[in-house]
Image (cartoon, rainbow, N blue to C red; front, side, top):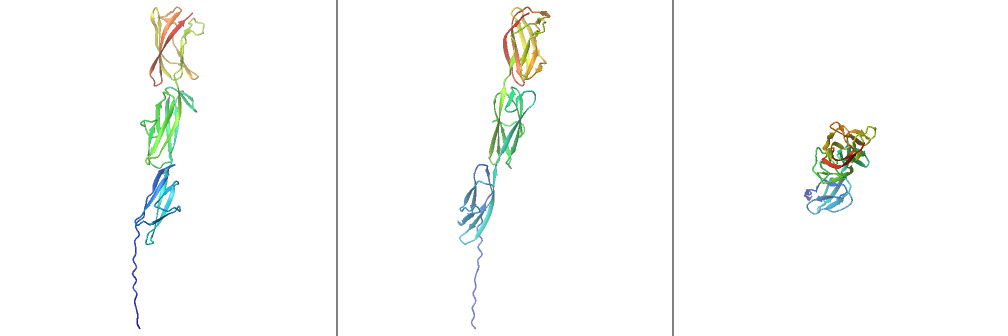
Length: 274
């Protein structure tokens, strides 16, 4: 009639916490996932690799399993995201100052608007226009073309990822033709002194001097006649104070200014013949 009692004590062991965090990286770089748990457990990743960390080159969710010295198992996961910024510059030019769209060729003084399209990043970003401080909002930049060069834009997001795009802008300088002679003899041919310029000239002033009389003409030339890709500026008719000037050689000064540009000076001789 003897009996016995066996008492077994079971102790529940709480495994140490497993730490792993989501990672962000720029496209083309390698992200590193780190896992940490006290007690030096064995780490096994969903990729088949072992160890405390793994290198990731593709976005997605990755998990790690740990087994500690007591045989307890922990599982945790994290997401890896890559920022791949895509940017595109779209130029637009108003008025008759465009010579070619592709490649982009404009007359000096053309007002160019650059519109920016950004894609591929879910993060906030900053824009650096043409290597300097941004002007206006983040998506549009306006500037006056003064020289041939690459126009560049850079975008950097809050993660530190960046992208650069550029547009080559060829700027054609002012062109003009100031004849060295004219014949105001009412024959219908070359009776008025005229100047021909590129369409980016906004204002002109012509001064003509006689060696005997002094200044015989001083006018700001207005209302040029538009021609195909050029302008014709009617000027002097060869008279001074209502009288025809005798044939002779005059000196002249031509002041001209491009659209949104500075005044420039050209001088030379002008022969009047009858």
